[in-house]
Structures are given as structure tokens and as C-alpha cells.
Image (cartoon, rainbow, N blue to C red; front, side):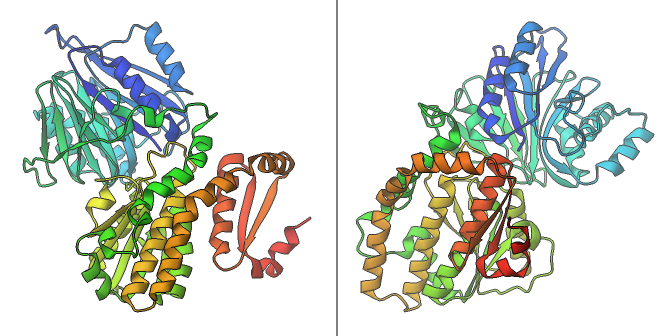
Length: 518
């Protein structure tokens, strides 16, 4: 849930960094910070200055303003505590004698690295795993490495997932970033360049972005960017034009992003289904040029996902087995990646993710491939995301940016995409007569209007909410296809209202949960 922004320019980058953090607030956080180097443009010795605070980015902005923070190169971060409690000392950026680091992810061997660095004389002032990275980079700089090489040597020693951005007083004309298992991209400007964990952080400064791959390390200067791959070889990553606009992430007249995105569902589903709106039949080409060949070759489906996307996959299992007659299993990605699994080379691996950057889902896909699974399809809302790039086939849900932490329109568009997948597999397997196909297509065409009608019940929902807000626990029940919908409902109630909620298959109520009902 953390966010990273970095910038190097011929102007004060603090407003750019703060604005970037504001655009990442939707991800959730408990503290924020910014570090800049001043003096680069004037040619004088650069000085590292840092401001951190708990609470909102607005508080950080006030603090930075009151201290006159300014610089032409810097990094910023919003943190959601994993190692160490929310506090100023644990907030990023972390510093080691002129080196400053921000980090998303989890370093699994940080305790081992901490012992090694303490033996070298380094002192730790935070409880985070990130401080290890700052000291590692400083240690490599002390050994004579350039900042770029110091970062590369440091990340080789790390076990876990990371996206990092580093600046140093020793080399104030460069910003160095690296990633493995966590998203990071570059933004290209004219005489200025940027880095961020999410495109939305950079829409105010550039639309030209470069998506880094796992193992990449990049150096940003005023003149351009240099990228090397996991083997240290210089490589050119493609430049993409982001379709995200500032207007797309504005609240408008809505009270919050979740409300906005709930009411965007009809249009999001209509956009997702646009390719079949006027069609007389569904085509495998919706999923890629090789889709028909691959779909004819598969004999089962394995869906890998987390959270809300997992629930969408659970719904699809009922569809796939009932309509397409194809065996389907649905796995929580974070569980699948850590257990022994029996591979099936003819099984289609389907990953479902709004962002395409869900670390556990990416790791689960890599694990499935290592077991021998040959075919992978990603259903995703973000073009050029890690899951899309790692898959043979893709389907983009076209939901638009989902800013709210709790997924809404991503869920409904994922279901629309999975419905199309079901129809195509059923058709290729000879289980979808033309009249049934036409009937289902007609239902899909009516779906956006049906969603609009559902949204008209808001006054009734408000009345229910006032009643349910007084409760401390809730049970959601469902049978068949409605069981995963109950699971999604329970997740939403927990996520948004902090009311404890659990979902059960309706037939299981009598096997224990009934004892909790007043």
C-alpha cells in the first residue's frame, strides 16, 4: 500500500513530490516523508534535507513549507506500516550518512543484514527493514562504487520484494531506482525525469512512461535515463504514452472515490463489453491473436487471484464448469505460491488483478510456469502491467483508474471479462449453440442498463445502513454462485465499516455459525 515518487529537474521538485504523494493517498498510509538535495544546480556541495511526519500528506506539506524545504532532486514516500509501528522514526525516507532511500515491499533477510551491518559499525535508529538498504548502499559507496553500482550491488544481497529510489550527497546529479517484485516506472520529461510506483503520481508532469521489469536498475539524470537488466546489461525499455488523465482521477461532485466508482460501474462494464456490443458472436480474438489455438489446447482452468479478484474467480468457476464443461480450480495466489501443486501442462492459468502488479499473484504465476504450465491469460485493468507482460494472452477490463482502496468497478468488469471467457471456451468445446450464444450476448448488452437500475436503490441502502451500523457482527450467506458474492459482501463490510463480517455457504449455517446468531 506504500507509494514512491522521485524527481530530478532544473526546478524545485518538492511541489512535484508532494503532489505525487497526494495522488497516491488512495492507497492508504500512516506516515509520509520527503528528502531532497539542494545545491546541485548552483554547483555547490549538495546537502540532504529530510522532512517526515505521521498522518496526512497535507501535514507533511505544511511542515516542508514551514522549513523552506527545496531542492532539484528528491524522493518521497507514503508508508503503510509492516516492520515497525507508525511513527516519525519509522517513516521513509531513511538515511545513512548522506544516502537517502525510500522502499516499497518487504526485505525477508533484513535481520541477517542488520547483524552484518552492525558488525561493521552501523547504528540503526528505526525498526524498519528499509534502513538496511540505506546502510548497504552507503557501505558500497564507501568501498568506491558509484551510486548506480552501489545500488546494484546492494539489491543483489536482498531477499524479498522491493521497489527503491535512492539519492546521495556524494552524487547529487543522479537518482537511482531498482525493482524486484514491486511496481516501479519512470516518467520522461524535457530536461527532467521522474520515478513512481504508480502512473497516477506523475500525470501532472508527464505522460511518457517506461515500465521497469523485475531486476531492472535505472539511473535518472537531467539528460535522460539509463536502464540495466538483472544481469547488469544495458537495455532499452519501450516508452509508452499513459492514457491516464488528471480529470480521470478527480472526485467531481462525489463525496469520495468509492462512491464515484460505484456509480461508474455501468459505464465501466459498457466499455469492457464494447467489442461484443454489436457483434453476433463472441470471438477468441478478444483475448489475443493466439487465443483460439491456445484455448483449443487446454483441458482445465486454474484461476490465481487475491481478495476481490479471487471472489470474481470463484464466480467464474461455476460458469466455466456449468457452461463450458471444463474443470476449474480457483486458488488464493498467496497460498498457491507456497504449496506443492500438481502441474498440468494443458491447463490454462488465468490471473485476475485490477492493477496487474499484485505481488502474490505475480509470484504465483511465475511458480505455475516453473511447474510446467504453458499457457497464461491475464485479466487486468492496466496495460503493460507486470501480469500482462508475463502472460501469453490478455484481456483489459477498461474500468478506468480505480482510486478507492475497496474494489468496486474492477470486480464487475472482471466478472464481465470472465463471462466472455466462459462463452468462448464453451463455444470452442461445442457446448454453446448459436441461439444460446445470442441469448447470452443480449443479456450482456443489457447489463449496463441493469446496473444503472440497481444504483437507483441508494435511498433504500442508506436506510439499511443506518440500521446495520449499530451491529458489531454480520454473517453473509449464499448458495452456489451467490456464495462468492457473499464472500465479497463480507469483505466489503469489514474493509469499509470495520464491522466484523464472515461469509458462509448457506448450507453450512447449521454446522456452527448459527450459534452466533442472536
